[in-house]
Image: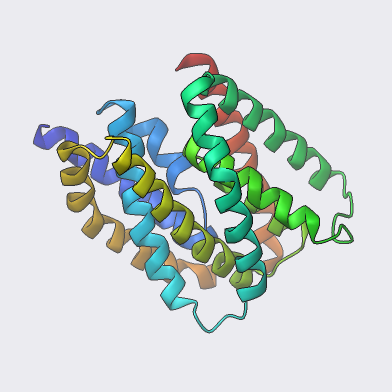
Length: 243
């Protein structure tokens, strides 16, 4: 890898880390599609997952005072159940098809939110279902954020609780995904080296992002999340079509 390539990847990591710190999600959705212009897709996915694991763990520690254990436990436990199914899909189905379906489902969720459908009264089984979907997507496409973001948005979580739950759940899911990647031989020396070089840049992005949180009006937070979800859905569909 040339110095120029690393500089571009460092800028991508910096921007994605700021978004992740502000909203609690978006690192992989932003970084992976841009990284593949400079490294191959497996290296981009593994690097983004490794850096995101450290980022989420740091922010989990920062938000440890937030009481979000019950929801976090439901999502982690159900996601673990879904991860083997995701691995099976990864080995047997076209990943582009999975990403296309993901994009359509995310945009449908955005439509429901915009139309004001009240999802708060849905039973806890809905939480478990979204956790299973996130687990499936984590190992099938390395994109586990949208179903969890949609769930917390539908439950009308406050911004600090929103970020706390996502960071706790993502830390576990990303760690387990890295273990699976390692066992599958996807953790190459190039990906490991790039991740180690990117972690200090990520730390800078998290620092900037946490300082910018106070400038976001809580009333505008939900609208910004809807905007990011829309971009996520469109990104997934575009990735399925053009990858």
